[in-house]
Structures are given as structure tokens and as C-alpha cells.
Length: 157
Image (cartoon, rainbow, N blue to C red):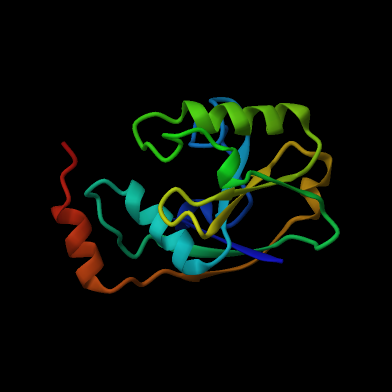
């Protein structure tokens, strides 16, 4: 299976997990967020840009996950109301932290909070099988300038 990540080019040369808090993990848990497609990876990244826009410093990472690796899945029906709230990650972090701490599988399949019928994959960089996941290649991200203009005009209140 291929998964995709959009990240600043300076981080695109390896599968690096800094351990920063995210929707599905608490601080200190080393995970990498990926998506089932480039468009979903783009949308996920775009929504987090918060007015900063994109530039030529971003890359698309194409990552190969061997089909033999086990995947845990979070069904939308199992999530409490409010799980998509971008101001409060506590519902998702509780689920993701439990998965990470149990360490049973190297991947967690989760619904995208932006487009919930699509999926993201959270990779546990400390799992024993993580070494089997490979960065195949990177390519430059060149979004339409209208998207960059739109993001720069966005000003969250």
C-alpha cells in the first residue's frame, strides 16, 4: 500500500517523527501522519497552514507500507460526538494514545476530520515493524497560485 505525506522539503528526506502532539497522539509519542491519497494529504496540510500559504519549500512524500503489516482501524461510528473539533483533540488523542501505548500494530487507520469518508494512516515510528516502511521518493509540491492566495487571506479568529 502507498500512503502520502506533504511536508516542508527539509523534512522530506526521511521518515522523521519528532513526537509533537497532533490530533491522534499526545506530546512525546513519535508518529508520522500520512494519507490514503495525495489530495487528502494536501487538504490535511492546507487546513493546518492557518494563513501561511504554501511555497516551493514543500514536497510530497510517497511511502510504501508492506501489505503484510497489521493495521488497527478507528471506525467513525466508534468515535464520540465532537471528534472533528479542531480546537479540542482530546477524543482522538485518547484513542490514538491507547493504540500507540499498546504497540500492537505499526499503523492506525483513522477517518479524515476534513473529509470523513476518506482515511489517514498514523505510523508508529517506535514500533518494531516500522523499519519495514519505506520512503519511496519525494516530488515537489506545486499548488495552483490561487490556493496559496486563498490560504494567505485566511485569518482564523
